[in-house]
Image (tube, rainbow, N blue to C red):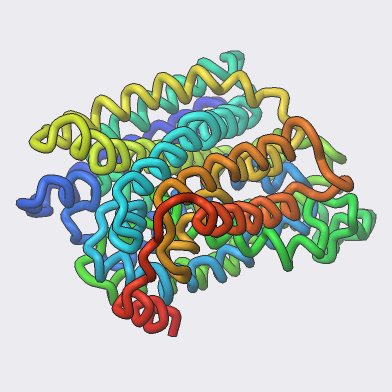
Length: 483
């Protein structure tokens, strides 16, 4: 039997085994009587290992492994280091509020804190647009790039992306968050182990000698022209992580699915600790590959895995990457379904709607849209930088709304909605029209956030009407959550 046949056999076998194991484990669980909790929050039964596993695998997908290794510089380790900080903020500040208010979606906190359903609706729409136009197609694209480069497939990127999308849709539409979290954890454990093996074999391929790699690729202090200038660590980088780990439904949804706050926090702490080790998997191999191949971009990791791992291990690792891509993709579908069903459909269309059916329809629609948009990202120079840059279109305006809701006073609804639109428009100008003073996009994200908050409060002062002050209970809650 040839090496290719061995790889494919192990790949298919492991993928099927994890699917069957997930199905068996899901059958053991007793469904919750609360329909929304069962469909979107796994019945509130996720224990801390599954929360940690699902958090990590949802984040560490092909767009992270392929994209971050594809930069072939140590600087990208800051994304992992910053993630640990973002997770701690989620555990200590935002998560207690989510649980205190009984939130099914992160956006529900905005309605509870600001007393205005329209803000919840507006932010949900921004999230949904971000998932459809940015996250879903990027996940599919990078997953397809990895499989194509590793197995030297003749199929097009779009064809491989369609296969991914159909498999992910099956998990999200029919298994719900419970199936996603369980499969994530099994895949995550194996992905971590195999990722470390890739790093070991990569070091072995260069005889554990990093000499010859330029110093600028090994440093953690980025210059002005680098992907991550050191000054950005003090500005927008902080807020990117605060948005992604604290308010993003795709991430926070796992923490909301625990039986209680303490169990959720344990899962988050475990994920934060593991995050500090992740550069060994998502950064170091790319730097080593520079010595082996030179600067080869997003195909780096697939080529490295194919070259340094024995065939049977390469097939197993491909199965884990396949699972990681499915994790990010189906997690995004499930979060989109939750946001649409709970924040839009139930509120404005039919309060008695069948949530599972609505969720399935949303998942199908977003799958079709995500696949259709894959070709837009095929010419991106750096998929990680492109994704982070595009995320600013909605991440900073959304974070502004959360900061106003959590630590500020109440403002007029029209001021907050207008401020959100201003933030989106401002960052769109920075991205597509004018880059002031040549500032890095991470700096521009911080400027967008500050400008959006300033605009919200300015409009609140000049527009007709008076915004009520935050209640003493709300102020006390914010103070207690931050301790």
